[in-house]
Image 1 (cartoon, rainbow, N blue to C red):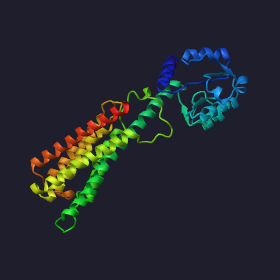
Image 2: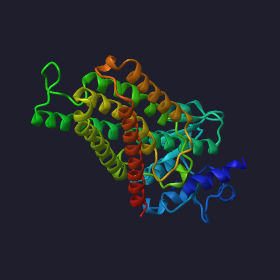
Image 3: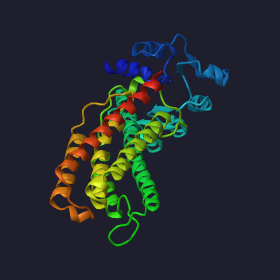
Image 4: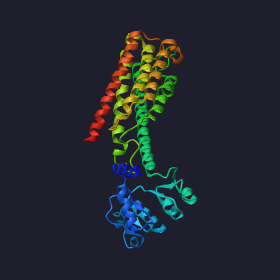
Length: 353
């Protein structure tokens, strides 16, 4: 169809090479290849494939009059060169290559039962453009996985630092709660609340992000880590930054509102600040489209946290806070978010350079 040349051009921009392997006549194969946008000047036939080395096979974009064993050898030659190979086919003779490829794609309408059985994916509409759409969706899913990992790792790193360093300072200063136990910066039930309420909904909303432009990037290497260098730097810098704000509240407020109120303020800051950090974690060198689900998750989380602090503060071992303390909590959360956004831009600007 007319959408095929556009789809071929899109995957070429995405760093994906398209190779035609067919049983048709060489002249027919070359004409169709040029029509769909495959840059080919010569065609290798099945008789010539046996005389070519693996390195020479990699330079050919159109193969004609091929046999099943030729298709299998082409796939294996590409894999030996380190390529990730997706093979499309519809006949019984395509089955060995479909099975050997990293991703076997069978035709759902005109494909044979054998081809559909051995393939990893089945195209219901037999359209090459659907493969391109699936690639775009797959890359977008990968982007979104990285986003909520950055979000969860950075915010949980801040929790670990607050609890660990807060306990050390409490031990050094001899701070005790009403029962005489060492004063914890956050109680177990407060940490559970943060992980359930302010972690879960934003992370789920990040999975619904839409990322235009993912096909304009080159493919990632197979051995690339899920959290690459820029993501790890964002996690470490923003997580440490948020922990610093929380420890600042723990250090400054006890002399003004008391130890229990200071801990409650820190708890509310950690929860609300965590919600704002979802926005910073979703930005990379790509800028996603607005996500109303994320806006809703953050707004709902803030409302629930404010309701908890004003209507039922004793439910999670917290105490009521004066209005000025709430203002300080919100100001600290917004400030930490703003600095996290600055860290995000610094990290990705450095990566772009």
